[in-house]
Amino acid sequence: MQLIDSHCHLDFPQFDSDRTQVLTACHQLGVTKLILAAVTRDHWARLWQLVENTEQPQLFGSFGLHPYFLNEHLPDDLQQLRQQLSNHQQHPRLCAIGEIGLDYYLPELDRQQQLFYFTEQLKLAKEFSLPVILHVRKAHAEVIQLLKQHALPRAGIVHAFSGSYEQALEYIKLGFLLGIGGAYTWPNAHKLRTMLPRLPLASIVLETDSPDMAPAFAAGQRNSPTNLPQICTELAPLFDIPATQLAQHTTHNAKQLFAWD
Image (cartoon, rainbow, N blue to C red):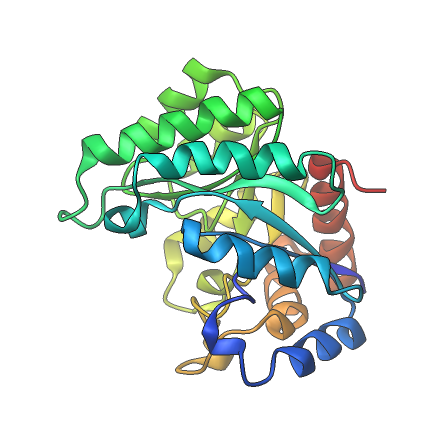
């Protein structure tokens, strides 16, 4: 069973003590590719060093400014982001701009500032013809409207999708894939678990968001990309298919989006 973790933060300090062991275990478990999503300018160098220096499993990187860390961003970061994208645009391990988006769940995050950084990064995605990795909380209507306005050439992934079925269809119409992970394994996630089998398999990718969003079977623990096979195994019955088939579909979807052989 080959799997792709379409969203994780393996560069975070929570993995400093055992990152090599985690990578070895991923390779042994069939997690063949992992996408490391950036969150602030300060993270870019560390993330990219890890991407370039790891061969098995293959690591892919994105550069972006996460809305949750809004107070750490400076307007000049956008120029630095353009420079990073320009420096690495021919590198096969650069796969996206992200993690970017809107987070209206936390009232202390200024919405106008979020919109500024988000729209500027959408412009960069269009300029460099890169997919985007989206973080969206309580702002799906606004994000969908902006995506329609900017008409990105390569769409992307809505990470940790938790919107409505109708919103899912809107993203799918725009060419986006929906990131599904640990949140869907919790038995009390009735809305998510009911919606999931209604979605076309061609629209789904798997993720862990590790070290965050631990699945039910790892409650209270650090989440890890090594949990992806079991996440796949637990979600497959919701589609009434074997785990191997869910792995095959989601891996194919990610490979198509990022133009990976």
